[in-house]
Image (cartoon, rainbow, N blue to C red; front, side, top):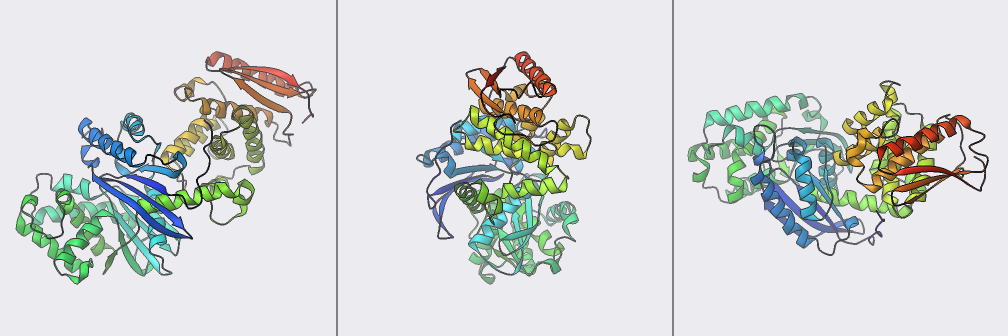
Length: 514
């Protein structure tokens, strides 16, 4: 997969936010450190309302989503892949058939789609708010989505605590107001349910942890607009204003009879759940004033994408020591520290694996970066057990909280790491992708070369590929001086022969002995 040229520093960037209630497409650019919106489209898809009792996304909901993504694809014509990032949130975190939907969704959009974890969603939300509405105060940022609510503490540009809770305006509305009937008892039931989900956040997000509270995205914005249209405190969200609005809903008796200026038609079916959740947050966390924020997930995605591109421009050496940059690098270093990884061995394996991968796929810089992260963390499972540590490593990488990585990226790294040793059948579903095959082959060969856990020379091995054949060339005298390593390489060639995916042969080349 050839690497695409990087876009100019101030080129437009695009974010696709596939939320549980709405899909959003925003294009913007960072000009001299300031964010400027270019275009914005919102489509009420209600993907979250399409999860059935078995956790499966219904065909009707899937088609609504695909239709929207096709419209987005038309607006993204002319954008290079490096200028676009698409993320999916709680509904696709939950959906048991998400992989089948994602295949169709990526074809409709024409771009990869990443399913991000709740904490990663929260981090990106805070990034959007902090950039568009800077402040030095300690902040609580709340984002009520369709099926999840994110709570973040932070100061300046840095989030210090980020959590996601599986309760939102769509899920509460479906459970407590599915037939549209609005009663005081139903609001109380919804508030109890929301409070139970949020109870574990009471101490970490207590009022003494923050100085101002901001609400991001749809529900907060919708409620604020209704309050402003009613002339109540310029749209400021307070417990009293929420009680008044809930009273108006109960008086109406049904969502179809709601007469609230400022409330959009598409927001009616989920306003009750959103109000119950907002009131619960205000009451439980002592929020006297909740102000709508200017930033949200989509802007955070664009800002994060801008930082990733900037990190690629400055180069790997500068990136390692620079402040900011691609936050995934810092996340990997923190995981190495946390799981007490032998960083000297990880560095050896990374260096050899990336060199072999570049031999075979010289123009795939992104594939090399992904392989580098896999090599950095390939022994993370040793913290659990030496036996089958590659399986433990794969499990941890797929499930650990790794800020700045999406769930999709973590699963990809986990699959590479799972393939670092043993038979190849366990990863055969992923072996249809040539990049993945070369990444796994390079990692396996690097692990073998570095198995003695001592210093190695980079010029001892080189890897060439031609179609479904690969040839590992060894420097003159290198293999003869290392009979145990040669034995392991011969075993490796037999493993690839059995796989039927790619044939690996061993040969010689002239060069230094490592």
